[in-house]
Image 1 (cartoon, rainbow, N blue to C red):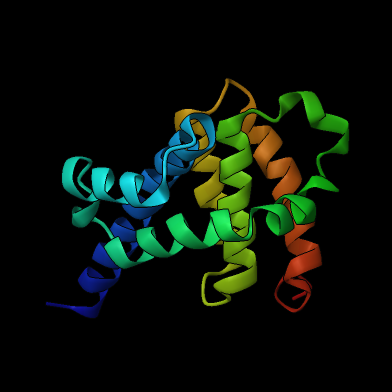
Image 2: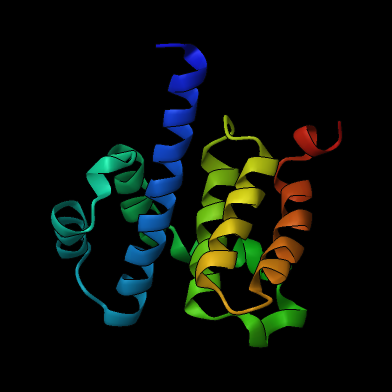
Length: 149
């Protein structure tokens, strides 16, 4: 199998993991369910294993553990849009902020693109524009070396 095919499979699995973790974090935020129960539910019933299960689990446990810090980081770019911030958008921004901080191997444009795509699928009509409007300046702050080139 070619490296290109492996890369495409990896990207698809990562995309699937982000999709599922967005749903899981939304459930966690709204229901207050224990993360272990959500993990079990998603692994057994939501097809997480067909994606990047390890990445899903990392995001599922690390984002809630850092939720205050993540929210504080992106919120300075949300002040004019406070009324836009629903649980879906909030969790998309948490995922992207986490990736900016902890996954420097993922290019900032990919982080933004994946977040915008999640917003197009799960967010309100114009939420993808809002997500892009928050993540673009955030990326310039968090990934200065990468965005200045």
